[in-house]
Length: 247
Image (cartoon, rainbow, N blue to C red):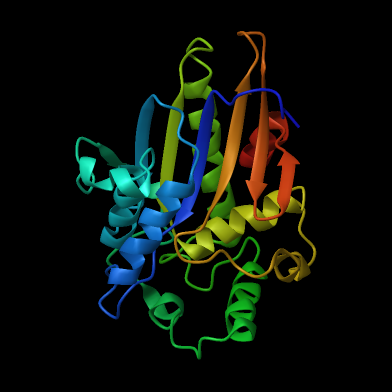
């Protein structure tokens, strides 16, 4: 799709890099974010950063953006996050109050880190669907997916307000349960019935990994959207997305 067209905007939704026991990025986490920036398409215009307000997420997106248009030999030209503005977006957080993790997420990382355990953890979470075991603490998977959909819709509207010469990278920093909720619902056409789709993808989103929405604007007459994550490329229907938000 659109192999011969250039995107007018790219919306990147990125999980934070590897974190230490105190919740901040590890040295490896910073390198993961840098590598993600070096590998990401840069549209040579604006870079807009949104994140959940958590330091490790903010540091990830700033580090990623700082290296977005650089080669390995040029990285000395741009300091970490220099001249880049970022904005806190509550929709990108998994908690209603960032200071209250509740029971589920206080123990989220208390597992032996194996593929099976990580997959089982996200499966159990996604199977809550429109429920939350702690409704005052965290959003349901359905609402998390809708929160990401709202951000996508907002950024699509913004990107398409301008003429086709305008180019922008939106870098959105978030967390595993939020991003996986949207991926799960979107790839299931907003009516999920099995978490097997996550295993088919190769497991949950990894540290500093992202999915992207490419916008191809058609001379002010319309636009096309394409979702890309790992081996999956799929057209995103903005009307279906908006119906999901309002459902």
